[in-house]
Each structure stands twice: as structure tokens, then as C-alpha cells.
Length: 423
Image (cartoon, rainbow, N blue to C red; front, side, top):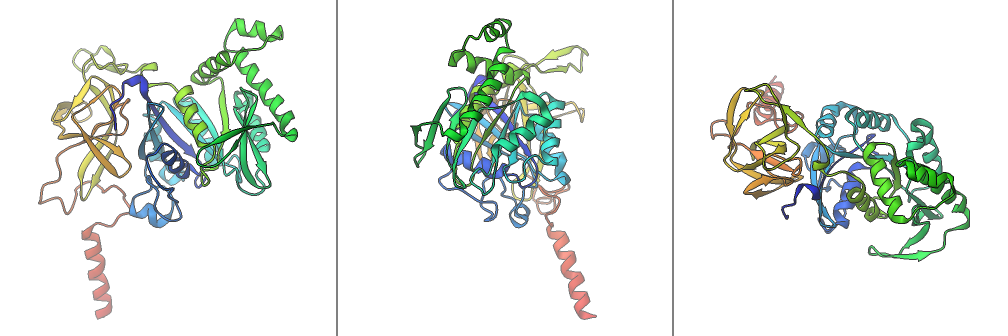
């Protein structure tokens, strides 16, 4: 994987109710971007983000996984989070380091409790977001109904960007609202132009008017032009949409079929074009020595600073941490000050994480990923030394999943079973 500057990085968390399709969406995006050559399924236990044994056995996400994807010369660090409230801690730690969010909504179930919780987390953390309505190839799915439900709950800031074209119960194409143009899927990632179906013309006009209202609200000049009946160019619409998404004034609503890998390219394009890069945000800290405010702002020329958002103890790899680099360039074997513990710690290597796989880097600069994950390198994992031989069998900290049974626990259970048989 290439090393990207901060402006070529997007850190995106996937949120939503349990079973709504977050992991399947990551799987589809990884396939479209060329990261994988086949589509894994949660039910088959072969997705790239649900790789833990308990996740495979239970067939749902338990941990937050980082999956970096390259699209249009931009590196997108996707954080796939659990949907069940039992693992809300995993969700909150991912939200804390993300710059934007994708909220996945089931086309069958519509807006659920997990959807509302995801929206609240985005509001609390000020995250720009996109809503993806999944399962558009399922029976009795009504995109228009879900849009109305979203508008009823969250107001006119939910703006449809695409309308699905369905024939029977199959998703066969889409309408781009901004362009007022329709496309049909032609297999192998190809699309061909087509006429807007007559039964969707009213929806197109309604959604187009909603989008133009959102565009007009971004600028006083645009507002005057809108009331004068003037039209906006595609470039003006695109620029206004990006501004309104950054400010949280508009939330695009799109759709997909993750299992059939349809309309995934448009979602990736929107992530690149509409979501902010890390350097478009400000981040400040405190200088422990002077007490003065420190403006990190993801500047590689400033002193090194990073935020550890997840530490994992693996019985085979040892202990490693996922970090978000806020300033400076973190290198392998750097000695860093741990403000929480009040002491210095050294890292052994910088590694980019792609779910279960790792790739070493000499350093983590600007927006790259390493053993300590940087804002621009979210999938970074600063990996401290492996556990010593005396402790490698029995880590003192909990393993990656608290559900996993350690060798000591398995041995104790075996002894109890033998005693029970003997009695």
C-alpha cells in the first residue's frame, strides 16, 4: 500500500443496527476496489473484517476492525463496528477517531433503534455522515418509504442523492439526482445510460427540489438565484453539497445491494468527494510541561503526538495498539511519552492493519497507517515488543476478545470434566 499525504486520507466509521449490513458493505467495497477477489459472506464466516473465531462462530461483529481501501488515489480507512449494544464500547472508540460516518439502514427493517443511536453518536461527535439504504434487491423494499421515515425523524437535512431503479424485486439501475440522469447496470462494473422510468419521474423532481434547497442554503448568492428561478451548474451543486455535508447541514441518502455489489462505486465516490480529510479539521491538546494549549492539527512538522484508541493483546502476535497520529512523524523504535501512565514507552515497529493482516512501514507520517495508527493512517498499529516466553502463553491482559478461552481456562474445565466423570 502506498504512503498518502493527509489530504488523500478519509477515516470513516460504519454505524447501524445489528445485522443491517455494515460488514457486507465493507466486503462489497473491498471487492470493487480490488482489495479482494471474492465476496465473503457473514453467514459463511469468511469476511475480511469478521475474522475472530467468536465472530465467525456467532456470525456477527464483536470488535471494531480497520479495513483500508484505496479508491481514486485516496486511502479510505473504514472502521467496521458491531451493531449490538452489548459492544457499544467498540463503537464509541471508533467514532472517537473517525472524521465521518456511514450509517447503514436495512431496506427491509427501515429505521431501527441502532439507526437512531448511530445518528446520536454522529451528532455528539460532530461527524458528517451518509445514509446507505441496503438490501435494495430484496422483496417488498420501498426506498421512498424509508426516505419519508428518515425525513420525519431528522428533517429536510436528509437529501436523497440516488434513486433505485427496480424491475420486479431486483435492483437494475439508479437515477443520479444531481445530474437528473439514469443508468442501468450492465455487469462487471459497467453501466449504460437509460431513460428515467415514468413511475419515478415524480420522485426525481421531488428529490431534485430538496437538493436545490440544500444547495441554496449554503450561500446567500445561491439563495437569491434560487428564488429568482435560476438553475445551478453541476460544479456548483457538487461544491455546495460538499460544503453542506461538512457542516452537517445535509445528509446524503443513497442505496446499494451489498450481496450483488451494486451501486458500490457511487458510495466510494461520495466518500472521496464529500467527506473531509483529517487536515480539514482542528485538534488541540495540552502541553504537560507548560500547561499551554498545543495545536496539533495533523501537522507533520510539529512535535509528535498521537491518540491510542484501542490496545489488543493477542496470544500469537503479542500486545499492539491502534493509534491516531495527530502531529509529527512516528517511526519504528521511537520512545514516546505516555501521558496517562506518566512514563516513556518504546515501540518496536510501525504496521498497517487490514483487518487480520499486517504490513510493516518505517514510519507513520501524516496520513499513513502504522503500528500506531495515525489520523491519516488510521490503520496503524504501534506494536510493542512481543510477550516474553514466560508470559506468551498466559497474557496478563485480556485477549483480543474477552469471550476467547485461554489455555488455563480450557485446562481447568478439562480437569473439572474428568473429576465429574470419575465421580
